[in-house]
Amino acid sequence: MTLTIDDVMNPAARGRSLSRRAEEMPASPIRKLAPLAELAKARGTRVYHLNIGQPDIETPACMRDRLKTLESTVLEYSPSSGTPEFIRSLQSYYERRLGMQLAAGQILATTGGSEAILFSFMAVCDQGDDIMVVEPFYANYRAFAAMAGCNIVPVVSRGRDGFHLPPRELWERALTPRTKAVILCNPGNPTGTVYNREELDDIANFCREHGLFLISDEVYREFVYDGRKAISALEIEGAEEFVIVVDSLSKRYSACGIRLGALVTRNGELYDACLRMAQGRLSPPGLAQFIAIGAESLGDDYTRGVVEEYQRRRDVLFEGLTSIPGVFLQKPEGAFYCIAKLPVEDAEDFAVWLLTDFSHEGATVMLAPANGFYVSPLGKSEVRIAYVLKEEDLRTSIQLLRVALEQYRLK
Image (cartoon, rainbow, N blue to C red; front, side, top):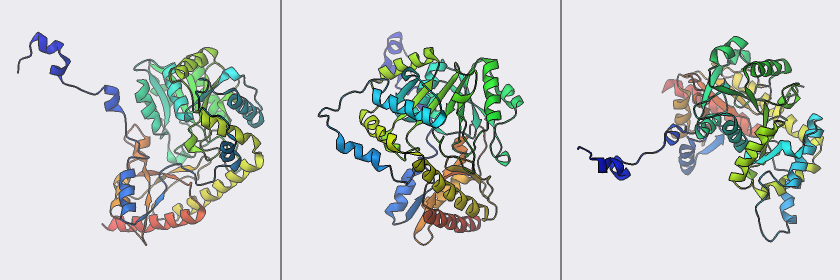
């Protein structure tokens, strides 16, 4: 058919199409198999969820009980930057936890850590700019980059090195003329890696020399094991103007559903830009901020108890997985995740098979295929496992995996 000038000027004649952003938006490797899990449950199969970082630890009563004291008869907008009470609670937390005094104008309340990452990407990148990240990385960074119109540029780390930072020459090789920032997750999701001070100083020097921002995703800051300490990027000397910290209450207090986090920076210009974005979305969740203030009554004993619980779960998982022939992983140092290499060619096919064809004693396991945590064609035989279940359920899950791998190899 030949189009006339009138046809060309008529959008309906050209046909409708989605944006490139919509087409490039990746599916979540953490959630994309969820429909298969629901079908398995409908068949009567119990599914042990090792695919998602949803803790089963009780949200502290001091937070839940705050709702009983709510006297407001109108649930109104909160300030775009966060309520003064919530911001003060975060100031108190940073002073107590890191010995650091931050001004109210350096902390921006966000809808989860996710919005803090999205704001950071949009604040430092123009369309087509690059963000460098250690691979494997939290899969949703790709989604935030797609929304912000920027690109993820991976720098590959190795499982045999515990996924610690790659050498400087690999960073220099991956640098492009459009690189604007580095994003790190410390402690790491999906790897469980905890970067030491020397590594953070090295990456800060790299950012300083190349005029890059350093976005530090620290939502698992509390969860470090075997006597380690997580170093915040806020503690790096001379990095005040280029460090952006992403924080969240989701994992710290087992309160994922309140969707409350924070963006922290000493760069006033960047803070103001992100505040204008926050004004555009009106306000972070007011009820969540009201609930969160209850955490002020929690002492160090609460955090210590939760960390000890996760360390026990880590030990159960590591000992169990490494006893299965052909499974390889390094012992996680923090967070509550690990990347495990399985004796299969295609871990995604295995993860699907677990939900569609496998059941042992009425149960199966749901995993997150690790290829979704890579940009490069790696991770095909790896999975990410979240050890957020109680020890008894973890032991059952490990036994299910042992039986499943034996059957899968014979199919």
